[in-house]
Amino acid sequence: MTLPLNPFKKIAKQNGVKRISQKACELLAQYCEEYTIELIKKAQIFSENSNRTTILERDVESAKKRES
Image (tube, rainbow, N blue to C red; front, side, top):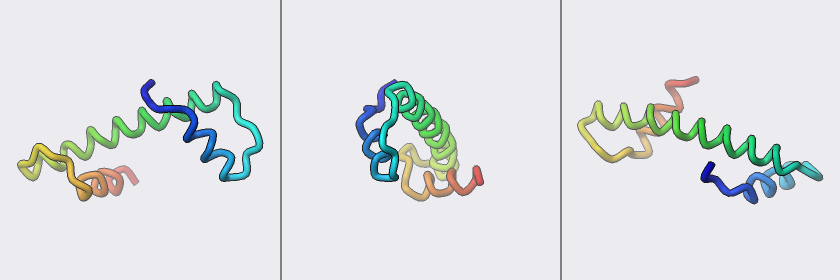
């Protein structure tokens, strides 16, 4: 896992959570990382279909819309 855990603790507290365990933060980070990797893979397909090697904002938006 490469995502830092402190942002998850901060987000939880900003949303009314009084306490969150280390393991819960680790699991949230893992799920976010897995979701992000899948979204990147889908966005890459959009960029490749447009004959580009760079993923643009519109590729990510299209990938996100595609999964809904």
